[in-house]
Length: 495
Image 1 (cartoon, rainbow, N blue to C red):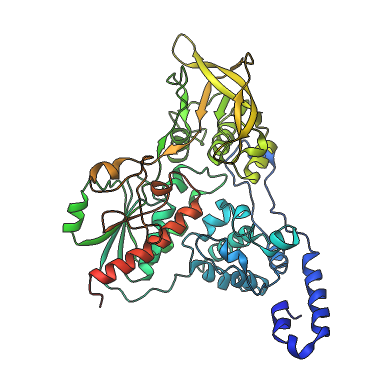
Image 2 (spheres, rainbow, N blue to C red):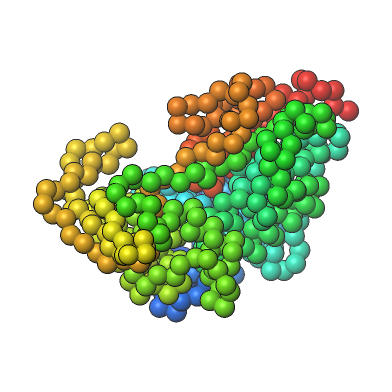
Protein backbone atom coordinates (compact mmCIF):
# COMPACT_ATOMS: atom_id res chain seq x y z
CA UNK A 1 0.00 0.00 0.00
CA UNK A 2 1.38 3.40 -0.97
CA UNK A 3 1.50 6.49 1.27
CA UNK A 4 0.31 10.01 0.64
CA UNK A 5 3.79 11.51 0.40
CA UNK A 6 4.68 8.97 -2.32
CA UNK A 7 1.62 9.99 -4.26
CA UNK A 8 2.65 13.61 -3.96
CA UNK A 9 5.96 12.84 -5.65
CA UNK A 10 4.13 11.27 -8.58
CA UNK A 11 1.47 13.92 -8.83
CA UNK A 12 2.77 15.51 -12.01
CA UNK A 13 2.73 12.19 -13.83
CA UNK A 14 -0.43 10.66 -12.43
CA UNK A 15 -2.84 13.60 -12.54
CA UNK A 16 -6.38 13.17 -11.25
CA UNK A 17 -5.90 9.43 -10.58
CA UNK A 18 -3.29 10.31 -7.97
CA UNK A 19 -5.66 12.77 -6.29
CA UNK A 20 -8.34 10.07 -6.18
CA UNK A 21 -5.98 7.55 -4.59
CA UNK A 22 -4.73 10.17 -2.13
CA UNK A 23 -8.27 10.81 -1.01
CA UNK A 24 -9.00 7.11 -0.64
CA UNK A 25 -5.81 6.60 1.34
CA UNK A 26 -6.51 9.55 3.62
CA UNK A 27 -10.06 8.38 4.25
CA UNK A 28 -8.83 4.90 5.14
CA UNK A 29 -6.55 6.34 7.79
CA UNK A 30 -8.65 9.17 9.19
CA UNK A 31 -11.64 6.86 9.60
CA UNK A 32 -9.69 4.75 12.10
CA UNK A 33 -10.38 5.37 15.79
CA UNK A 34 -7.53 6.49 18.05
CA UNK A 35 -6.15 3.72 20.21
CA UNK A 36 -7.17 3.52 23.89
CA UNK A 37 -4.42 2.85 26.43
CA UNK A 38 -5.37 -0.11 28.68
CA UNK A 39 -5.64 0.89 32.35
CA UNK A 40 -5.67 -0.90 35.69
CA UNK A 41 -9.05 -1.26 37.43
CA UNK A 42 -9.58 2.06 39.29
CA UNK A 43 -11.07 0.52 42.43
CA UNK A 44 -8.13 -1.86 42.73
CA UNK A 45 -5.32 0.47 41.69
CA UNK A 46 -6.40 3.16 44.19
CA UNK A 47 -5.22 0.80 46.93
CA UNK A 48 -1.77 0.03 45.52
CA UNK A 49 1.11 1.61 43.60
CA UNK A 50 0.83 -0.34 40.35
CA UNK A 51 1.16 1.76 37.23
CA UNK A 52 -2.24 2.98 36.06
CA UNK A 53 -1.55 3.05 32.31
CA UNK A 54 -0.53 -0.42 31.14
CA UNK A 55 1.02 0.37 27.76
CA UNK A 56 0.04 -0.62 24.23
CA UNK A 57 0.18 -4.13 22.81
CA UNK A 58 2.15 -4.58 19.59
CA UNK A 59 -0.98 -4.79 17.40
CA UNK A 60 -2.41 -1.64 18.99
CA UNK A 61 0.82 0.29 18.42
CA UNK A 62 1.14 -0.78 14.78
CA UNK A 63 -2.48 0.09 14.00
CA UNK A 64 -2.19 3.47 15.72
CA UNK A 65 1.04 4.27 13.89
CA UNK A 66 -0.80 3.39 10.68
CA UNK A 67 -3.18 6.31 11.26
CA UNK A 68 -0.33 8.77 10.63
CA UNK A 69 -0.83 10.64 7.35
CA UNK A 70 2.91 11.12 6.67
CA UNK A 71 2.43 14.85 6.33
CA UNK A 72 4.72 16.68 3.93
CA UNK A 73 5.04 19.39 6.58
CA UNK A 74 4.96 17.55 9.94
CA UNK A 75 3.79 20.24 12.34
CA UNK A 76 3.91 17.72 15.20
CA UNK A 77 7.69 18.22 15.37
CA UNK A 78 7.17 21.95 15.90
CA UNK A 79 5.09 21.12 18.97
CA UNK A 80 7.85 19.03 20.58
CA UNK A 81 10.18 20.99 22.90
CA UNK A 82 13.06 18.56 22.29
CA UNK A 83 12.53 18.24 18.54
CA UNK A 84 11.85 14.49 18.20
CA UNK A 85 11.57 13.29 14.61
CA UNK A 86 8.02 12.13 15.26
CA UNK A 87 7.05 10.99 11.73
CA UNK A 88 10.21 8.87 11.51
CA UNK A 89 9.74 6.95 14.75
CA UNK A 90 6.00 6.53 14.14
CA UNK A 91 6.69 5.13 10.67
CA UNK A 92 9.26 2.74 12.15
CA UNK A 93 6.61 1.43 14.54
CA UNK A 94 4.17 0.94 11.65
CA UNK A 95 6.87 -1.08 9.87
CA UNK A 96 7.49 -3.04 13.11
CA UNK A 97 11.04 -1.69 13.45
CA UNK A 98 10.50 -1.08 17.16
CA UNK A 99 14.17 -0.92 18.14
CA UNK A 100 14.76 1.53 15.31
CA UNK A 101 11.95 3.70 16.68
CA UNK A 102 13.60 3.71 20.12
CA UNK A 103 16.93 4.67 18.54
CA UNK A 104 15.28 7.56 16.69
CA UNK A 105 13.73 8.80 19.94
CA UNK A 106 17.08 8.79 21.71
CA UNK A 107 18.66 10.95 19.04
CA UNK A 108 16.99 13.97 20.67
CA UNK A 109 15.29 12.70 23.82
CA UNK A 110 17.36 11.43 26.75
CA UNK A 111 14.26 10.10 28.55
CA UNK A 112 11.77 8.62 26.06
CA UNK A 113 10.18 6.14 28.48
CA UNK A 114 9.68 8.96 30.99
CA UNK A 115 8.28 11.44 28.48
CA UNK A 116 5.95 8.82 27.03
CA UNK A 117 4.36 8.65 30.46
CA UNK A 118 4.33 12.18 31.88
CA UNK A 119 4.73 14.60 28.96
CA UNK A 120 1.54 16.62 28.23
CA UNK A 121 1.46 15.66 24.55
CA UNK A 122 -2.15 16.80 24.33
CA UNK A 123 -1.05 20.46 24.47
CA UNK A 124 2.20 20.03 22.52
CA UNK A 125 2.98 17.58 19.71
CA UNK A 126 -0.52 16.08 19.56
CA UNK A 127 -2.10 19.53 19.60
CA UNK A 128 0.02 20.32 16.52
CA UNK A 129 -0.91 17.08 14.72
CA UNK A 130 -2.70 17.51 11.39
CA UNK A 131 -5.64 15.56 12.79
CA UNK A 132 -6.10 18.13 15.57
CA UNK A 133 -5.35 21.27 13.58
CA UNK A 134 -7.08 20.60 10.27
CA UNK A 135 -9.39 17.60 10.63
CA UNK A 136 -10.62 18.40 14.16
CA UNK A 137 -10.26 14.73 15.05
CA UNK A 138 -8.35 12.81 17.69
CA UNK A 139 -4.61 13.19 16.99
CA UNK A 140 -2.13 10.37 16.62
CA UNK A 141 -1.36 8.99 20.10
CA UNK A 142 2.25 10.15 19.90
CA UNK A 143 2.86 9.82 23.63
CA UNK A 144 1.51 6.27 23.76
CA UNK A 145 3.71 5.32 20.80
CA UNK A 146 6.78 6.92 22.36
CA UNK A 147 6.24 4.90 25.53
CA UNK A 148 5.64 1.75 23.50
CA UNK A 149 8.93 2.03 21.60
CA UNK A 150 10.96 2.76 24.73
CA UNK A 151 9.29 -0.03 26.70
CA UNK A 152 9.68 -2.54 23.88
CA UNK A 153 13.41 -1.92 23.72
CA UNK A 154 13.80 -2.17 27.50
CA UNK A 155 11.65 -5.29 27.87
CA UNK A 156 13.62 -7.05 25.16
CA UNK A 157 16.96 -6.32 26.79
CA UNK A 158 18.48 -4.68 23.73
CA UNK A 159 19.02 -1.11 24.87
CA UNK A 160 20.91 1.01 22.35
CA UNK A 161 23.33 3.77 23.32
CA UNK A 162 23.27 7.02 21.30
CA UNK A 163 26.19 7.73 18.98
CA UNK A 164 28.90 9.78 20.71
CA UNK A 165 31.58 12.03 19.28
CA UNK A 166 35.24 11.37 20.11
CA UNK A 167 35.99 12.24 23.77
CA UNK A 168 37.58 15.69 24.08
CA UNK A 169 38.57 15.47 27.76
CA UNK A 170 36.86 18.74 28.71
CA UNK A 171 35.06 18.59 32.05
CA UNK A 172 31.50 19.86 32.39
CA UNK A 173 29.45 19.96 35.60
CA UNK A 174 25.67 19.57 35.74
CA UNK A 175 23.94 20.65 38.95
CA UNK A 176 20.84 18.53 39.54
CA UNK A 177 19.77 15.19 38.09
CA UNK A 178 16.23 16.21 37.18
CA UNK A 179 14.94 16.32 33.59
CA UNK A 180 16.74 19.54 32.64
CA UNK A 181 20.06 18.32 33.99
CA UNK A 182 19.75 14.87 32.43
CA UNK A 183 18.88 16.33 29.02
CA UNK A 184 21.85 18.69 29.15
CA UNK A 185 24.19 15.94 30.36
CA UNK A 186 23.06 13.61 27.59
CA UNK A 187 23.68 16.10 24.81
CA UNK A 188 27.03 17.19 26.23
CA UNK A 189 28.11 13.55 26.40
CA UNK A 190 27.12 13.17 22.73
CA UNK A 191 29.35 16.15 21.94
CA UNK A 192 32.27 14.28 23.54
CA UNK A 193 32.55 16.08 26.89
CA UNK A 194 33.53 14.56 30.24
CA UNK A 195 30.24 15.16 32.10
CA UNK A 196 29.57 14.81 35.83
CA UNK A 197 26.09 15.27 37.30
CA UNK A 198 25.97 16.41 40.94
CA UNK A 199 22.81 15.53 42.88
CA UNK A 200 22.03 16.88 46.36
CA UNK A 201 19.73 14.00 47.32
CA UNK A 202 20.52 10.33 47.90
CA UNK A 203 18.58 9.25 44.80
CA UNK A 204 19.10 10.26 41.17
CA UNK A 205 16.29 11.65 39.05
CA UNK A 206 15.30 14.85 40.83
CA UNK A 207 11.59 15.61 40.51
CA UNK A 208 11.14 12.45 38.44
CA UNK A 209 11.81 10.50 41.63
CA UNK A 210 10.66 12.69 44.51
CA UNK A 211 7.78 14.46 42.80
CA UNK A 212 5.99 11.89 40.63
CA UNK A 213 4.36 8.82 42.22
CA UNK A 214 5.17 5.34 41.00
CA UNK A 215 1.62 4.77 39.80
CA UNK A 216 2.38 7.38 37.14
CA UNK A 217 6.14 6.89 36.69
CA UNK A 218 7.79 3.81 38.21
CA UNK A 219 11.23 4.47 39.68
CA UNK A 220 12.56 1.54 37.67
CA UNK A 221 11.84 3.44 34.45
CA UNK A 222 13.86 6.44 35.61
CA UNK A 223 16.74 4.20 36.72
CA UNK A 224 16.90 2.46 33.35
CA UNK A 225 17.05 5.79 31.50
CA UNK A 226 19.86 6.97 33.81
CA UNK A 227 21.74 3.69 33.29
CA UNK A 228 21.85 4.44 29.55
CA UNK A 229 23.46 7.78 30.36
CA UNK A 230 26.05 6.02 32.52
CA UNK A 231 26.85 3.82 29.51
CA UNK A 232 27.35 7.05 27.56
CA UNK A 233 30.07 7.95 30.04
CA UNK A 234 28.12 10.40 32.20
CA UNK A 235 29.26 10.23 35.82
CA UNK A 236 26.93 10.82 38.77
CA UNK A 237 27.68 11.95 42.32
CA UNK A 238 24.92 11.85 44.95
CA UNK A 239 24.69 13.69 48.28
CA UNK A 240 26.74 16.49 46.75
CA UNK A 241 25.68 20.12 47.06
CA UNK A 242 27.55 22.54 44.82
CA UNK A 243 27.79 25.74 46.80
CA UNK A 244 28.16 23.79 50.07
CA UNK A 245 30.09 20.57 49.47
CA UNK A 246 32.30 22.48 47.06
CA UNK A 247 32.01 26.02 45.72
CA UNK A 248 31.95 26.93 42.06
CA UNK A 249 35.50 28.23 42.39
CA UNK A 250 36.55 24.89 43.89
CA UNK A 251 35.05 23.22 40.85
CA UNK A 252 36.81 25.60 38.48
CA UNK A 253 40.10 24.73 40.19
CA UNK A 254 39.28 21.09 39.42
CA UNK A 255 39.24 22.15 35.77
CA UNK A 256 35.49 22.19 35.13
CA UNK A 257 35.07 24.55 32.19
CA UNK A 258 31.32 25.19 32.32
CA UNK A 259 28.30 24.50 34.51
CA UNK A 260 24.63 23.80 33.92
CA UNK A 261 22.31 24.63 36.82
CA UNK A 262 19.11 22.61 36.89
CA UNK A 263 18.44 22.77 40.62
CA UNK A 264 14.68 23.06 40.25
CA UNK A 265 11.96 24.80 42.20
CA UNK A 266 11.74 22.95 45.47
CA UNK A 267 10.52 25.74 47.74
CA UNK A 268 6.80 25.29 48.41
CA UNK A 269 4.32 28.16 48.42
CA UNK A 270 1.55 28.56 50.97
CA UNK A 271 -1.59 30.69 51.17
CA UNK A 272 -0.70 32.52 54.40
CA UNK A 273 -4.07 31.93 56.03
CA UNK A 274 -4.67 31.42 59.79
CA UNK A 275 -3.67 28.04 61.17
CA UNK A 276 -1.43 27.05 58.27
CA UNK A 277 1.35 25.97 60.67
CA UNK A 278 -0.69 23.33 62.50
CA UNK A 279 0.60 19.77 62.53
CA UNK A 280 -0.35 17.43 59.68
CA UNK A 281 -0.47 20.29 57.17
CA UNK A 282 2.10 19.49 54.49
CA UNK A 283 3.29 21.08 51.30
CA UNK A 284 2.83 18.75 48.34
CA UNK A 285 6.63 18.78 47.89
CA UNK A 286 7.22 17.47 51.40
CA UNK A 287 4.38 14.97 51.26
CA UNK A 288 5.35 13.45 47.92
CA UNK A 289 9.06 13.45 48.75
CA UNK A 290 8.44 11.55 51.96
CA UNK A 291 6.25 9.04 50.18
CA UNK A 292 8.36 8.60 47.06
CA UNK A 293 11.82 8.62 48.67
CA UNK A 294 11.02 7.25 52.14
CA UNK A 295 8.86 4.31 51.05
CA UNK A 296 5.70 5.55 52.77
CA UNK A 297 3.63 3.90 50.05
CA UNK A 298 4.67 0.53 51.50
CA UNK A 299 2.20 -0.14 54.29
CA UNK A 300 4.73 -2.42 56.03
CA UNK A 301 7.39 0.28 56.14
CA UNK A 302 7.89 2.58 59.11
CA UNK A 303 7.50 6.13 57.82
CA UNK A 304 6.86 9.56 59.35
CA UNK A 305 4.11 10.41 56.86
CA UNK A 306 0.66 10.71 58.42
CA UNK A 307 -1.87 8.46 56.66
CA UNK A 308 -5.03 10.45 57.25
CA UNK A 309 -8.58 9.21 56.83
CA UNK A 310 -9.96 12.60 55.76
CA UNK A 311 -7.42 14.25 53.48
CA UNK A 312 -7.85 17.59 51.73
CA UNK A 313 -5.52 18.69 48.95
CA UNK A 314 -5.55 22.39 48.10
CA UNK A 315 -4.89 23.08 44.42
CA UNK A 316 -5.80 21.91 40.93
CA UNK A 317 -2.55 21.10 39.15
CA UNK A 318 -0.82 17.81 38.35
CA UNK A 319 1.01 17.87 41.69
CA UNK A 320 -2.30 18.23 43.50
CA UNK A 321 -3.66 15.23 41.59
CA UNK A 322 -0.54 13.24 42.45
CA UNK A 323 -0.93 14.15 46.12
CA UNK A 324 -4.62 13.33 46.47
CA UNK A 325 -4.31 10.06 44.58
CA UNK A 326 -1.34 9.14 46.77
CA UNK A 327 -3.38 9.91 49.89
CA UNK A 328 -6.10 7.58 48.62
CA UNK A 329 -3.55 4.82 48.21
CA UNK A 330 -2.27 5.41 51.73
CA UNK A 331 -5.71 4.64 53.13
CA UNK A 332 -7.73 7.87 53.01
CA UNK A 333 -11.45 7.15 53.23
CA UNK A 334 -12.27 10.63 51.99
CA UNK A 335 -9.69 12.22 49.69
CA UNK A 336 -10.69 15.68 48.44
CA UNK A 337 -9.47 18.28 45.98
CA UNK A 338 -10.37 21.81 47.04
CA UNK A 339 -9.87 24.24 44.17
CA UNK A 340 -11.01 27.83 43.82
CA UNK A 341 -11.93 27.60 40.13
CA UNK A 342 -14.12 25.24 38.13
CA UNK A 343 -13.04 21.76 37.10
CA UNK A 344 -12.75 22.87 33.47
CA UNK A 345 -10.16 25.46 34.46
CA UNK A 346 -7.93 23.10 36.39
CA UNK A 347 -4.34 23.20 35.08
CA UNK A 348 -3.93 19.44 35.66
CA UNK A 349 -3.85 17.16 32.65
CA UNK A 350 -7.26 15.94 31.58
CA UNK A 351 -6.05 12.36 31.92
CA UNK A 352 -4.98 12.91 35.54
CA UNK A 353 -8.36 14.42 36.44
CA UNK A 354 -10.11 11.51 34.73
CA UNK A 355 -8.04 8.98 36.65
CA UNK A 356 -8.71 10.78 39.93
CA UNK A 357 -12.47 10.75 39.34
CA UNK A 358 -12.34 7.03 38.52
CA UNK A 359 -10.45 6.43 41.78
CA UNK A 360 -13.25 8.05 43.83
CA UNK A 361 -11.48 11.32 44.54
CA UNK A 362 -13.94 14.01 45.62
CA UNK A 363 -13.77 17.35 43.81
CA UNK A 364 -14.82 20.50 45.65
CA UNK A 365 -14.54 23.16 42.98
CA UNK A 366 -15.22 26.88 43.32
CA UNK A 367 -14.17 26.69 46.96
CA UNK A 368 -11.14 27.98 48.81
CA UNK A 369 -9.82 27.50 52.38
CA UNK A 370 -9.79 30.61 54.58
CA UNK A 371 -8.75 29.15 57.95
CA UNK A 372 -7.55 25.95 59.62
CA UNK A 373 -8.45 24.72 63.11
CA UNK A 374 -6.72 22.19 65.37
CA UNK A 375 -7.30 19.91 68.34
CA UNK A 376 -5.71 20.36 71.76
CA UNK A 377 -2.48 18.75 70.50
CA UNK A 378 -2.12 21.21 67.64
CA UNK A 379 -3.15 18.76 64.92
CA UNK A 380 -5.36 20.07 62.15
CA UNK A 381 -8.93 18.81 62.46
CA UNK A 382 -11.04 21.23 60.45
CA UNK A 383 -10.93 23.56 57.42
CA UNK A 384 -13.16 26.56 56.98
CA UNK A 385 -13.95 26.89 53.27
CA UNK A 386 -15.50 29.78 51.39
CA UNK A 387 -17.48 29.34 48.18
CA UNK A 388 -16.29 31.22 45.10
CA UNK A 389 -17.79 32.64 41.94
CA UNK A 390 -16.00 33.41 38.68
CA UNK A 391 -15.49 36.96 37.50
CA UNK A 392 -13.56 38.48 34.60
CA UNK A 393 -10.43 36.76 33.24
CA UNK A 394 -7.14 37.49 35.02
CA UNK A 395 -3.59 37.62 33.60
CA UNK A 396 -3.61 33.83 33.08
CA UNK A 397 -6.69 34.11 30.84
CA UNK A 398 -8.85 32.22 33.33
CA UNK A 399 -11.81 33.84 35.04
CA UNK A 400 -10.84 35.32 38.38
CA UNK A 401 -12.33 33.60 41.46
CA UNK A 402 -14.37 35.97 43.64
CA UNK A 403 -15.36 35.07 47.24
CA UNK A 404 -19.08 34.83 47.96
CA UNK A 405 -19.94 36.61 51.20
CA UNK A 406 -21.35 34.57 54.10
CA UNK A 407 -20.81 31.29 52.26
CA UNK A 408 -18.26 29.73 54.65
CA UNK A 409 -18.65 26.20 55.98
CA UNK A 410 -16.41 23.72 57.82
CA UNK A 411 -14.97 20.36 56.74
CA UNK A 412 -13.49 17.80 59.12
CA UNK A 413 -9.97 16.71 58.13
CA UNK A 414 -6.95 15.10 59.72
CA UNK A 415 -4.42 15.80 56.95
CA UNK A 416 -4.05 18.76 54.59
CA UNK A 417 -1.69 18.95 51.62
CA UNK A 418 -1.11 22.39 50.12
CA UNK A 419 -0.31 22.37 46.40
CA UNK A 420 -0.56 25.97 45.26
CA UNK A 421 2.82 26.44 43.63
CA UNK A 422 6.57 26.45 44.16
CA UNK A 423 9.47 28.86 43.97
CA UNK A 424 13.08 28.26 42.83
CA UNK A 425 15.71 26.69 45.04
CA UNK A 426 17.63 29.71 46.43
CA UNK A 427 20.97 28.00 47.19
CA UNK A 428 22.76 28.61 43.89
CA UNK A 429 21.74 32.29 43.64
CA UNK A 430 22.75 32.83 47.28
CA UNK A 431 26.35 31.75 46.68
CA UNK A 432 26.82 33.63 43.38
CA UNK A 433 26.47 37.38 43.99
CA UNK A 434 27.22 38.17 40.33
CA UNK A 435 24.39 35.95 39.10
CA UNK A 436 21.46 37.99 37.79
CA UNK A 437 18.18 36.95 39.41
CA UNK A 438 14.60 37.94 38.57
CA UNK A 439 12.16 39.33 41.13
CA UNK A 440 10.71 35.81 41.37
CA UNK A 441 14.07 34.33 42.33
CA UNK A 442 14.66 32.65 38.97
CA UNK A 443 17.99 32.77 37.17
CA UNK A 444 17.95 35.20 34.25
CA UNK A 445 19.34 33.65 31.06
CA UNK A 446 19.72 34.42 27.38
CA UNK A 447 16.67 32.57 25.99
CA UNK A 448 18.58 31.44 22.90
CA UNK A 449 21.63 29.99 24.67
CA UNK A 450 20.44 29.62 28.32
CA UNK A 451 23.66 31.40 29.38
CA UNK A 452 23.48 33.39 32.63
CA UNK A 453 25.19 36.64 33.60
CA UNK A 454 28.12 34.52 34.82
CA UNK A 455 29.59 33.44 31.51
CA UNK A 456 30.49 29.85 32.36
CA UNK A 457 27.13 29.14 34.04
CA UNK A 458 24.08 28.04 32.05
CA UNK A 459 20.69 27.20 33.52
CA UNK A 460 17.30 25.76 32.64
CA UNK A 461 14.18 24.08 33.92
CA UNK A 462 12.30 25.26 36.98
CA UNK A 463 15.22 27.36 38.29
CA UNK A 464 14.66 29.51 35.18
CA UNK A 465 10.93 29.00 34.54
CA UNK A 466 9.76 28.84 38.15
CA UNK A 467 7.72 25.69 37.55
CA UNK A 468 7.10 23.83 34.29
CA UNK A 469 6.65 20.43 32.72
CA UNK A 470 9.28 17.72 32.40
CA UNK A 471 9.53 18.14 28.64
CA UNK A 472 9.92 21.94 28.78
CA UNK A 473 12.74 21.47 31.28
CA UNK A 474 14.35 18.98 28.93
CA UNK A 475 14.03 21.43 26.06
CA UNK A 476 15.90 23.96 28.20
CA UNK A 477 18.59 21.40 28.92
CA UNK A 478 19.10 20.68 25.24
CA UNK A 479 19.21 24.37 24.36
CA UNK A 480 21.72 24.98 27.15
CA UNK A 481 23.90 22.13 25.89
CA UNK A 482 24.04 23.71 22.44
CA UNK A 483 24.88 27.10 23.96
CA UNK A 484 27.47 25.61 26.30
CA UNK A 485 29.11 23.66 23.48
CA UNK A 486 29.50 26.84 21.46
CA UNK A 487 30.84 28.75 24.47
CA UNK A 488 33.38 26.09 25.44
CA UNK A 489 34.44 25.55 21.82
CA UNK A 490 35.33 29.23 21.59
CA UNK A 491 37.12 29.29 24.97
CA UNK A 492 38.98 25.98 24.89
CA UNK A 493 40.83 24.28 22.06
CA UNK A 494 39.06 21.00 21.37
CA UNK A 495 41.22 18.32 19.82
